[in-house]
Image 1 (cartoon, rainbow, N blue to C red):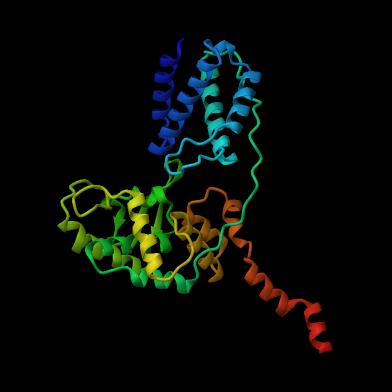
Image 2 (cartoon, rainbow, N blue to C red; image 1 turned 45 degrees about the horizontal axis):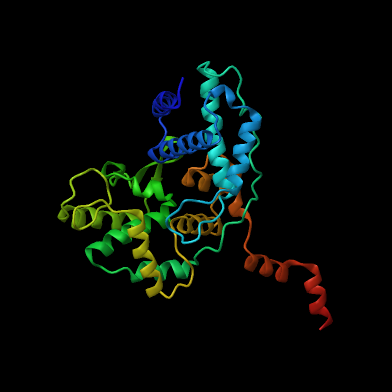
Length: 312
């Protein structure tokens, strides 16, 4: 069976599994990049793909640079990206084995890179978040952006979750958003009064005036769908007007929401449900206190600090 035929059958299989549009695009890209590498290496038959060949591809990925158009000097692929590509290949070879196209799975023992668990970066303070929300103008675009910022900060949505919202996902009577998260898992997220108000104003005073006719939630004045980068460009401008020095991005508001909830004594399980984390240990990273808090606790609580005070 040749590459094009395998690609058609495999992508059809993935579509039936209900992968999100973004995940499906990643699988397709990884498949085609792997097929291109195999062609360059002279690997024309599926039976030629041994574990040694796949280890060769793994080495190739470690030296490969990203093809991103956003940077003038592409960087080496991160361990996270390499692991995602290899995980997608492992899924491919499990499929080939299941379909009896291969008698053995050469990717079964392929090891992924160990990842260093990083602490979340610095989040916005409550004061900084308030300043940011206050500088958003009362124009039509500003009212839309304010509703989106309120949802990002109070509902802790991922970028894809925010941009994928539809009008039918806004359950205003129940003060709830229906969110489609990773793995096509749905969850209900409560709307705080300020967020509900901002969303209602956008829907009833702005959205109805714009010419877009689809069911998606976020639009532009000319009737085109809002793109995530255009929205974040606006947010960065608001950040400059508010005097913020930190680089603003989608995930920052998710981190900020979780951190503020934790400092407000919210329990970890509730934060897990809000964030849509499948595992509690993913949420637990927010329990790692920042350095400022740690210094304060050490000064107040450590007996050695008290000993030194007694000597003075």
